[in-house]
Image 1 (cartoon, rainbow, N blue to C red):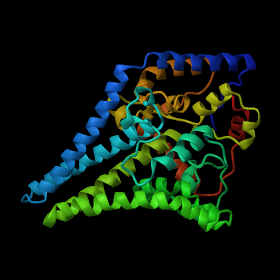
Image 2: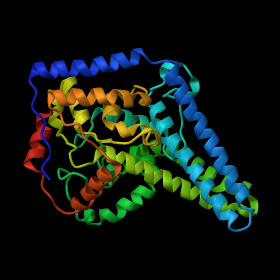
Image 3: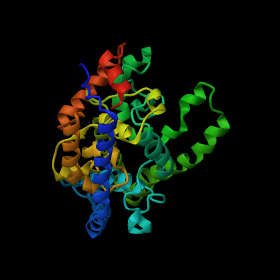
Image 4: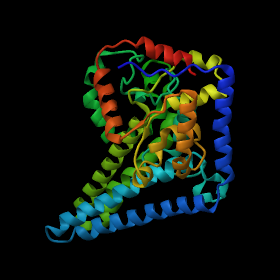
Length: 373
């Protein structure tokens, strides 16, 4: 499919476009207050209550007769999965971005917050907050483009191993938190002789500690607390983590790897202005159409475009900012990529399958990437 090309903006148009984007941010930040603080604190409470409910139900349910045991296991597992999804998406991801630092709440401080996944928040701040958000969709710099596992774009070098990527894409989805956990280890550099073992160990130690803590918590401590009902708790935790991984993978891939997403060469950085950076964020992202529940469960990454434009603005504000951003894009001839989750994820699946085979960059895509607004 031919990539959609934006109208190339003049220098004056780019300046005015950038000014409108920045004015929207300033207006929004100026109104931050109790509404936003109450929202994120309620999310934190929802995480605690749903986790407690899920874990208690799994333990109690382990001693109930059939079919009550299965019912308690199902509801308890779903409640625990909900807690993990909310903690990962709406609480952890957004807090770690520093979206709520203005509150002065030490429990919601982006530099100190730790979340309930195998990866450390310190590594996430490097790989995601800095590298991904700075170099969005730039080949060779944005390591989130396939996460070093998948060939998503034709500009990525093809290797025969890519033929099997539809199969290991499924494994990656099921184990997504572990892929995120080892991303900053940059194992590829070690295998290519560009990284020493001592360097690897320096980054591996804190990651290993976090992995061990997560494994012990979910698969040793809580199962042991259930005594003879350990298997019910163990499998409940395993499935809850798996559901969280699948959901997170789906949301993130829908936000970055749909058909109309544009990628860029490193050369764009030589002359890129701030307004052009805004264009790159918009064209390198995809939104999901839906209501309040979808927004909350995705951590408001249903508004991935707005998140890439305003990563440090509280995500609950994106729903109000999105219509303004969309209108600005329409007036300046910049494609605003949005669609249902089914549509967007269908495009992601097609990308994974299509680029498992050799392919060449389309001319229109190369030009779109090179023009960068």
